[in-house]
Image (cartoon, rainbow, N blue to C red; front, side, top):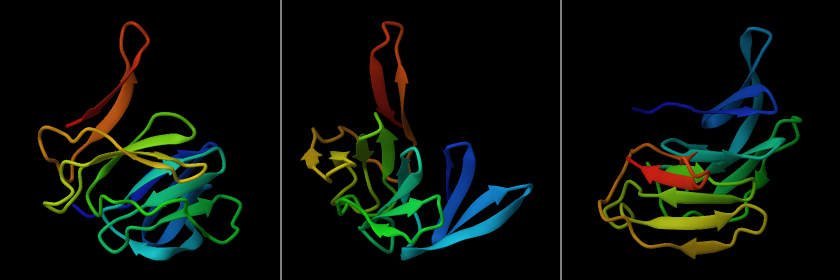
Length: 149
């Protein structure tokens, strides 16, 4: 199902879809800004004051969407996963992107650093995935665990 990517950034709810990002404020959605690229089937990561939009069906680029209303800025990397991938944010600076909507990318796993765009391909998934869910949690011992389903 095609739908917006929604994030909570500094207590603000923001939804981005196609070529626009909207901010939920005082009980209604208000236009925040236009995106640099059209995005559907994309993912995102957040910092304290911005959202990083990642890839999608229409673009493999990334772009920063600042919450202060300043224009979108080019992101730190081009994602190799295409559309329908899933992003796990492990820390303020590190994300892992899994799968994708192309037979060539469905088993990809890649780590990216948001600060400098460093890309590190990781061991491929045993089961290729597209349009899947993923996330990170802490186990009983406090160790962070990532999962794609």
